[in-house]
Amino acid sequence: MMHLLTSPEAWAALLTLTSLEIVLGIDNVIFISVIVSRIPEKQANRARQIGLGLALVFRIVLLSALVWLIGLTEPVFTVKGNAFSWRDIILVGGGLFLIAKATHEIHGEVEADEAGGEGASGGNAFFWAIAQIIVIDMVFSLDSIITAIGMAQDIEIMIAAVVIACLIMYISSGPVARFVAEHPTTKMLALAFLVLIGVALVADGFQFHIPRGYIYFAIAFSAAVEFFNVLAKRNRKKAGR
Image (cartoon, rainbow, N blue to C red; front, side, top):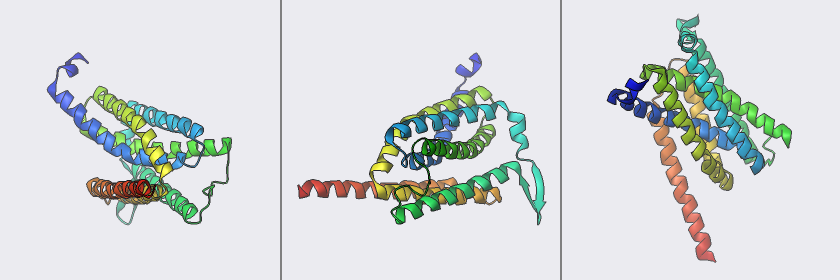
């Protein structure tokens, strides 16, 4: 352990892997922000804390099961010459879940359905939100940890990178969730991002990799445009007064 603290290579690996984990965590933060926007603020804070806490637990547990996790990339069946592993199956399932959830939420927004079609309220809505966060945490954790295994050799570095990334996700999730809740157009944009991310996960499951740089550039560009729209609207309101 001590030799890692004095190794420039270890620090470089930690910095690189932490940055990558933060980028991969953007998807998780967007999903949690959309989900908690449907429940009361007090419950939303608890749901966000539980969701991000579970994200950290899932990642550390998966890191502790390295041999089993690496085995998830081994083919389990073949369809028309295309081999599918458990990782592929989980990515396809998670991607379809994201697409279905985001489409359902978009429909609720378009139809002005205040309940969002959840069919639950109070405690039921809270636990339903937690259940959805758990499902998507598992999907994103799997992809994140497999990436970590491919980039670093020491499990201490992997765990440190995951913990730092989850702390940054926790700090940023509050402001992101409040911003999404306060600006309906931003929520619609976030839901569109979830559809895009879901499509990318399904494509990965079918061994068709879409470079994440393209997706994150589209997200950053759209978010910047929406930010200026919100700023312009706020300035127009001030001028009107």
